[in-house]
Image (cartoon, rainbow, N blue to C red; front, side, top):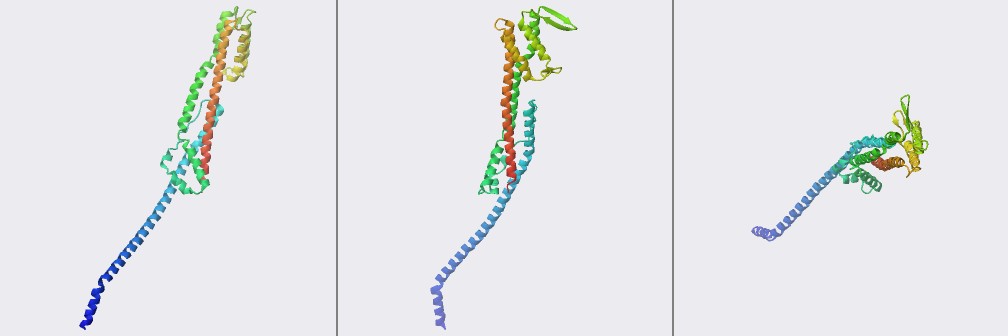
Amino acid sequence: MKMTILLHHNTIFDFTPNWFDWLTLLLTIASIVGAYLVSESVFKREQKNKEKENKELENSENLLLKNNLETIQKPIEKQIKSLEEYTESKDFRLSFYSDIQVDFLQFISVKDIYKKYGFENTENTKTINSLMTNLYSLYDFRSSLRSEVRTYIEKYNYHEQKFYKYRDLLYTKYFELCNLRAENIINENGIKKFSFNPDDKFMAEFTQLRVTTFNDNEIIDNNGLKDRNLLVERFIKPLIGISAKFIPEDYNAIEISEIANQVLSAFNDMEHVTGKHMNAINGHIESLKSVNSKIKEFQELK
């Protein structure tokens, strides 16, 4: 019995270290596997949560963008209408809509917008690209439009002051020449009439043109000048032609010709700056229409 115990004791004594090493190894492996499984579970759960958060972020960014786009759509449409009316009337009256601004873009993650509609979707990507390009063009829209209108008005007013010299031809300078060259002044029913030397063809033709102009209700009526273009065509240009026939012999004809040419030049300059200005305004209209159409295209994305 003792021998058996000894044998068992020796057996235990001889093999205990190897058994313990195997046990330790198995426990270590089990720990590693357990740790891996736990970490994998945690990782998957975090990934799932992250994907959910990313999806929620994409949806919130998309909603934020759409809300802001809806906010600027109406002001854009109103501005387009105002600009179109302005190009038709050309009366300096233009409404500015300050709500047309895209500062919200700096708070939106464009990357999440692309992810929302899929990077691999070429058509959606093109639509978003076009939208963003058009929106970024609006960053300086308000200041650009105001600057354009302000510059135009300044230039137009500058040339317009010269154009107003037509009044000298109809009134001040004309009566000055009448007092200088008339042989006789007759007062009929409170109206002064000038009589010139029969050889004074210049004043005779000047006077007749002036009378014809005042009798032309398409040019002038009781309220004043009606049509600047007709004034130029039917009074200023013919007066230049009349004056030319008596230059250089008649000094007064030279004076009248100079004033009339200044008026004509001013009118042409007014037309020129107005043409350039209207081209610029039409450019703004097209830009706003493009933005509006791109917004509508984006709103239709699924």
